[in-house]
Length: 109
Image 1 (tube, rainbow, N blue to C red):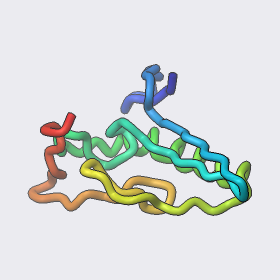
Image 2: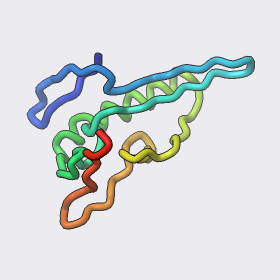
Image 3: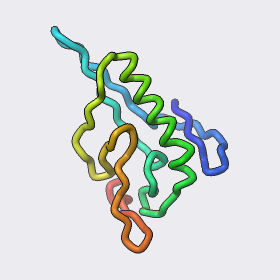
């Protein structure tokens, strides 16, 4: 169960906000982090900007990723882009806005 903050700062609890998968092999350990919500980016899945949500939640994601790097002693590498977005540093890459809106991604939900 994860916690995200709405635009007013109220906490909401939701399953599967972030998923961490760890794979050990003979020589090293790999970890994969995936996010499953639109709160981390500038726009929601409908393409509507929600900068207040992003401002409350994206820094928390960045802090978690930096903490994970520190714990594992390795620098994270961004994975492949998905239909919903691409990692950029410790955040989600900003989608191209057309007339103030991002892409509508709801057809894949």
